Length: 398
Ligand code: SF4
Image (cartoon, rainbow, N blue to C red; front, side, top):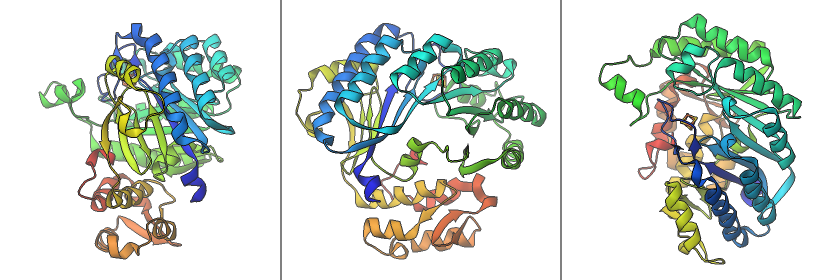
């Protein structure tokens, strides 16, 4: 636990996209490429602003998410990475991940990213069927995924994740099976499989609400999940989080920090942080973010970081709640002794009722001092998580 609390992670949000996908509710923008230079300078400056506040603390993982981080040209990426290396104590063996859209990379770009120090690439593949990719308004096709994957290996990356979405409109069970088989045949170290969900405010959700498209078939999604879980097991993958599978010990170390409710510092438009016992987030608009970073003076603390637009102060009840339900997302579950050591209270005094209730409902089980979702209840996780929510915790967290 000490290691977890003394070290921390860095997250850099890259908000640029070539086009906005129909199902996406992330903080991402198409048509703002002219801001990439000022954006990179602003993140570099933000890193320098935070540096004195984390002196002596080591960085175990760095994650560039988006948006589409692979859209950022190498010179701008170099500006950002150099500032991270100059301002933070990044461990030599740190995980250094980048989310990439397969349609935005070529061999030279991937080699450049490897030279900058990235050692893990996560591709937003979503599907290997071009008709499904068109429905999602993704900019890449299946052949581009295969090319990107080959170039990634040739560039020397030995840790690759592929994201896939199941339960897409019109997708048959067999269509999904082909997608997963194609992904497995490439031989990635990690796979993230997400059910298509309707997020508030997205074009897809509006189309479903207006009856122009049908919503996801939840029964079919459950069948796809169950089949995938068995298929992944046969292929030697370890299911370690509701939607995530890894070979050997290639779990995403960065995401484990989130699920174990560790500390991370987010930089860039809309980036969230969990540091200094607080949760806070930078201004979401890229233009506004750039202006606000410029207005902040070096050496000032969290109170005067102008780019921080949302802030939730320290809240012990929230921390207890988040630490519990985030851990329940993991197949390893919640280590009760570690939770009690972290908060200095008996877990039954705080969560006695939800623990009893979720056990009676068959959602969670107690095994070797850990509370975890039962194998049969993984898809019903939200039913369990919501019972551990403190009143102040947003349901967006689960
Ligand atoms: S590429 Fe990713 S972040 Fe960008 S719009 Fe599509 S889903 Fe959203």
